[in-house]
Image 1 (cartoon, rainbow, N blue to C red):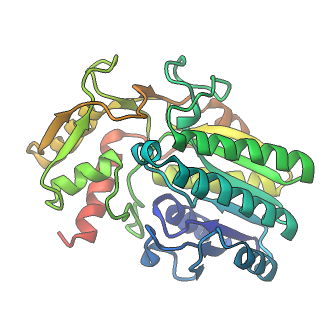
Image 2: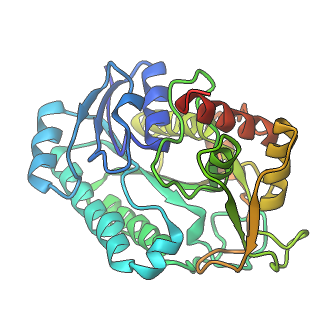
Length: 327
């Protein structure tokens, strides 16, 4: 049976990927330090090992003992504003620790490595929808730390023959339609998660950062992708690489954007009442608009999104929030 190791597999996207791998019949080993991940969101038949991926000795032992075929690497820090004020943390967690993981993977003979990257690698103001060849000039240390890892993977692949898949996510949202996992990170910063916490009373109010962008309503526009569609893309990419397919770097989004205010309107429509939202100044590191061209991904594998309606994404996130709060 194919065995896949998932770093950050108790986190939001990682746990969805873990369930998608289990559904596809793979054997799963999850590594997570549980600093933001939640153990109960990991599939019960997965092997969960609580370590930090910065522990090179433990990584070597695990990779050699479990004989994994592929790694899906989700572990890392993801808050853009935090990366601006504490860049060292992001270069340590996202770049330095990734290098150690890649080196140990090569030593252990892992065949394929799939990396969780981001649309934040692109230069702001590039023509949309963004293709993979759009200029790279990250606004934040978060984006820069991810781009550095992409470059390291390309070099390590060329030198050692490691098969590499890089998915540049746009804005991930929603929750598993079967209710098995969802966004559970404490103090999450994702817009739809925060809005759902306001809707369910966990937060009193929220802020809309920036209302003067050059967008139709002045708020940031993002390409929101359902987390289960993203997880399916990881499974297909693993199948592609393990079957001997060429390295892949691809965007993962729907090719259509929604503004912050449009997201709030979708939620309010489902609630039948407004939520408390304060209009605030822009945050450092936020691009006005990020919308994907995912034609390259679709040309390489049979990825067919199932949940691309914004109302469905918001409804799934709201259902999960109500579940974990017992409402």
